[in-house]
Length: 483
Image 1 (cartoon, rainbow, N blue to C red):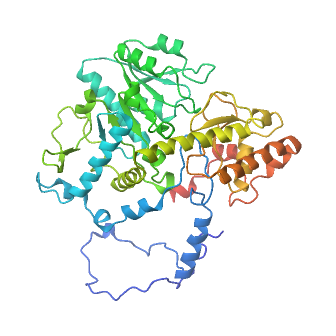
Image 2 (image 1 turned 90 degrees about the vertical axis):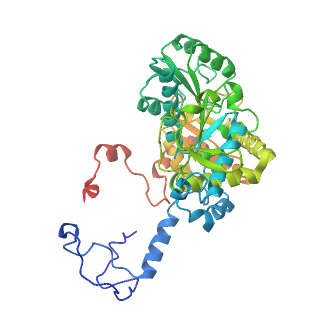
Image 3 (image 1 turned 180 degrees about the vertical axis):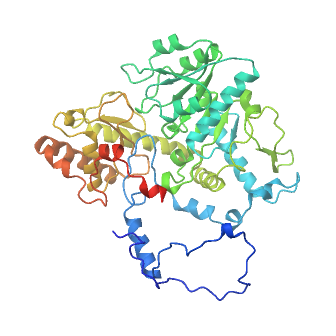
């Protein structure tokens, strides 16, 4: 497909500008002026429309096909939330409207949305307060680590480590390190959960906190979670809940009731706001009452009269972590989603997510290895080790899925599983969709037995076929980035 610059021909135009109605003279410093015309493509309006329409068809998203990307929860995004976020009285608000003199905010409705969402998230998770400011899941993680550090500083504690299981999300150790802590990795036991004996050996007065995903990235709920929380608190450390997998237990168990002190939530995962290229994201952080004084400013608080205002008077706060109040449109979408489903609907979300996951796992266990084969929740991990013995690796199976119109699962993660394929169907997919996925996965497993060489040609139908990943990494061509 041609680049739009390759389609360009001098003289073509897709727009007619009105005559100038201001003087041509300018008082700008000549150093800011172009000495030649901008190098923009000269194309007609139909060419522009057709070019970008073709590009859009090359993308894959939850609106175009099944997206079983484990741990990332690529669920369908309902369109009514987009409509609500586009309401003019929300979309046209300037954030500074909320920072007028106390009692004079011109966007109390927007503040009520933020306050209402934070209140509902407290109920769902068992936390005592939330901040909606973090602008992504990893940003929420970093904010959480900063809260841990602020708590220990305030109490005069000198702590060095954050304990994280080897099945944790990669952003966990990254957030801990950026937050100033060293990381101690705890290995998983034969059941696929954090080894309790090793955890006890590593837990001491130098531990600042423990970061856990629950259920973990294998889709397994740790049966020792209450004991882990109690031991952590006895050591003077804090429990951090990575909320990426809340979709599995929403309405069934509350992290706060289990003993967690801090939680971040990925609104694009559990609460159906757009993910990735459909973003931006949001990663609200909840805390127990002991940590409320450290939350970032400004906080949205409900006044005795019922109105919502901004509170900047928080002397122990970690300060500002984002411009204004987070990604408001994303918060609005999540709030609308929660209000539509209600209590029973949110419970049904988790029930159907777990049902779909276990259905796929039971259908595929005969054709792929399942290294940790206990009861799973919303996701599970297959291994292509059996196929790899024939020369067909997990990456080859992923390429085969692309050819059949299905986005691959998460590949080669968690790192503790060889040839890993992490599958999460979510609750939004029908049995027909799941059955088609099973059919394709079985076909690929059988092809790996009969004709493993066929996989070297996949994908045949994608715009980008099979690049040499090793060569691309070693011989990177970045010349275009410097032009």
